[in-house]
Length: 456
Image 1 (spheres, rainbow, N blue to C red):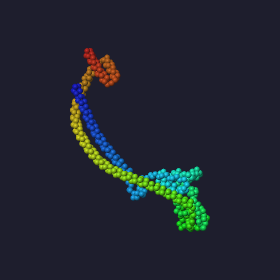
Image 2: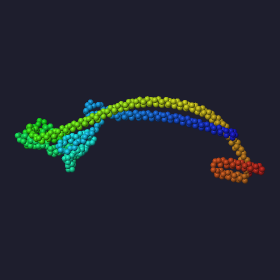
Image 3: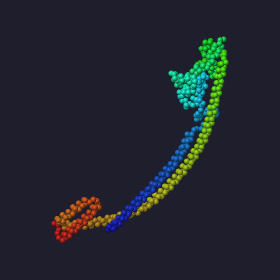
């Protein structure tokens, strides 16, 4: 086989290698297509999951709003009664109590007004100190002077020892100082004797009371009570215990006393009317607040019903959309799977056919390669024979001088080979050295033929 056939064989084998690379590229493209199809399916599934999670979040928000809505309160049977269910607290604006100066002597109305503020606005009066400060801030005249003196003296702890104790000191001082100053003196007819004594006028008392020492001093006949009575202060503190009653005693009232009684009665009547008006106003404010509350409750009920309806509609729409998306996803997945199977089957058939053709071509090439290999071995064998013959002729014609010349040439060629920088330069030097050796051999052969001398 000549060099042209060998070149054609190499070109053919290179073409086969290129074709193999093309098949590998096609297989890689098929693999990428399969991966892309799988990625599309994953993206679609992720999109479906995201939409489902979004719908679930909306449904959760609706359910959460329904759970946090205030529960419906059943209507009260008695509109005038205060609601006992979970009713929102109603803030009432009370008129500030009238300032107490101590001139009237009676501090009960003032304390009742303060107690109304304490009970209806507990958030503003959480501590007893706040309540005491509120009472003191509404004192004027001699009442304010008493509070100032108490605060400035060593007895200031009375103002900070709690509301019950403060009320006790306040009521006690009012009765002892301010009521006594306004109390008249009356005449008592006891044992055919007339006794003049100061009295305390208390329109809130149920009975007329006499001090035990006064009764003993004037030898008033007393009768033990079957059931003793305990007298208490406005703050609930126990004052004293009534154990006896006296025989009937005549009290002679002067015109000034009668006028004082009328004035006290008129003041009490005015206070009662004022309290009634205030209570009526509070009742009206309460009724208005209750009407507002009922309207708000009805609005909330309607709102909850609408939200319940929206929630049901949202649940139905969610279920329908979920079913549609599920069906759509299953259909698309089925179509994609069928398309992928067809694509895979088609390319597998093409690949098997091309693989079979390629294997047959490889077998043919292997046969050609074996033939070329045998030819090459034969050529190498012939070359070796020829080379051996030349060496034999050279040996026959080599003398000492020629041997030195050959050794010098070989040393020079060896140095040039060692100095070569790359393989290309080495191949070029080897070809050059072969030509030099061939020329030297030819020269020696020619000289030997002319001189007909042999190696001695």
